Image (cartoon, rainbow, N blue to C red; front, side):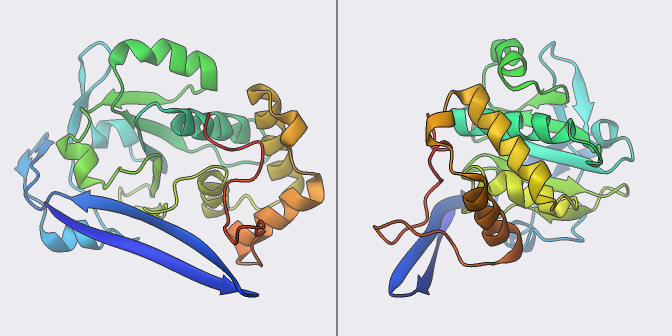
Length: 247
């Protein structure tokens, strides 16, 4: 197992924004596939990037029926997610579910690879409104490892040919950052739409008292989607804004 630590420091006005994470890749992981067993190379693991054509895999649903990636994607533009079922993962699913209901938002095919127990699926769907497909890998399993799915949540977009179109940064899984990054990747940049999604999410989570005002949310959208100046707190860091911390 090789580990590589990424620590990004962004200095602004004497403050430092630290966005970092430690994650590992198993260079010898085997990925189960409908075509056989594949061994990813070091280059596959180190350089997941747009244009990459992932190998097929097969994973079970909650009833134990196997589904291949080709079957799950069905030749459609697909939003693939690696999730463990934690609060942060469920917040991401809630964000995505609310985003889908907004007018004009592209309706991608959705597939979640979940490492939580299968009997959690009903409550997860109820809590988040997620209606997409779910298949299961074990924690640290070969498919999740191949897709560098930790820390979670991790999101990807596959185009209709199955090639990787976009993937979320591996060291920035916090919400609403990853949700806004995904929205930008599918072309949803309208601030009123995204502000409504974040407000609806805060209502669902009972965090309306701590929800920043609309102008602050707009600044956050500019920062995450457009590279504008980040909102920095008094400690010189850029955490999840109030109302979006993990619970």
